[in-house]
Image 1 (tube, each protein chain N blue to C red):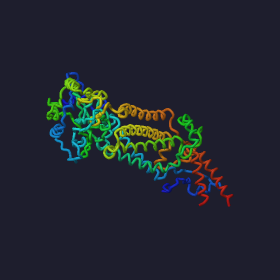
Image 2 (tube, helix red, strand yellow):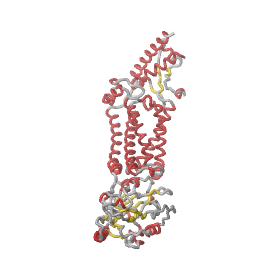
Image 3 (cartoon, chains in turn red, purple):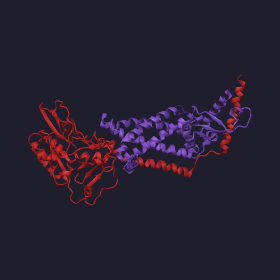
Image 4 (cartoon, chains in turn purple, yellow):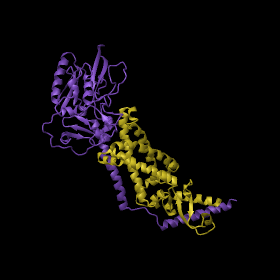
Length: 312
Length: 242
């Protein structure tokens, strides 16, 4: 951890800067490129993920669908999502997308997390959960624009794809990349991945996919997992990949502006009270008030008893 | 434990034998104390207050990184997260009973608006210029309604963002809105309670009223004259009937 901490550029619920000593010494952003046009839906990546991370999800039920498991879970960090889409020519297209954490450059989970150091971002761009610091509140789910983090029912900690940060830190590619048989998954520096994607997109366009393009959404300042899509103009076709993902304004307000404003409001209220006491002083009752009270009580008693004597 | 008997309209006499009934016959008349809050009222208030303090501390721990250390009071981050909603539920439950006791005394009346218009006189301790006040003044009534609204807001949004049991049943946008509304309600509540606590320190005798249950006649006459008159009336009528 000692040296690893020097590679952390962002840390959840932390207001001061992270160690800066290594910044600008040649750290390169990494990226995983998922070429949906090459994916055959074999799920080797899912299996590799299970193997490397020692995860075994519960065995689910078959609902007549290739997608298995049905959704991401605390034990399934990546998942092939199968979408059957009818295109404008009336042909069926099978759009398969490997879903999982997108490793946003501006991560909504990290912004929302209240626990210091439960979510970190490394200098290479990978967003990682440190479960030992996780308190299980689920704010990361609220902050994520891609619906990725899952809270385990066993330990109430949040889990998601780590982009194999353990492998990448020692110069290996993520396990899913290693397993992909078609080359649909590639890994490298973000710049290289963009160049590779550009070549793929050119090729796709030459074959009639006019709207082929790279999915590297600017709303979250780009992602460290990118897609090559045949229909980059309609990412929702790929099992609801968001068109313009960004951290919700509600989350920005909640975890941005409202935090200092809230503290200031509470402090000002307390200070206002203190200085009111100093300047104006307490509101006390004295002998005069007691005398006036007794006077009023006596006159009330007199009138009450006078009324009572008249009554019979 | 005479003060536990319901109405709180008891006026105790200063010296033995000098009951208020005799006052009408011209005997020396001294009132010692008025019961403002029964033992049940006080217990209910302080249960709510304790729950509020715990809910506020554990909530603030999850609100601002600078205050995360407060989670240590609750056994660390995960325990803080586990306990906070249950403490909150207890607070709301206690407040429901408290509010139902006080509801009828807190309807805003024309004289309350006049009181609020004269807030400058209020803050400089010039109560003599203000309209007569019943059991609660306009500030207290306003606080009451702010608390009702904030606690209702916190309860509803709290369920929506309670990840362990309920959050999964709500759409993510609803959870996001509930998160910010929860924070805003909590902020308004905490600031209101800071004002409430300060007001109790400022107006001497208020803390005694909520701890021991009683106030002096002079206190009641000065701060809640209409209530004082009502209490002395009630006590006199009752002592006539005895």
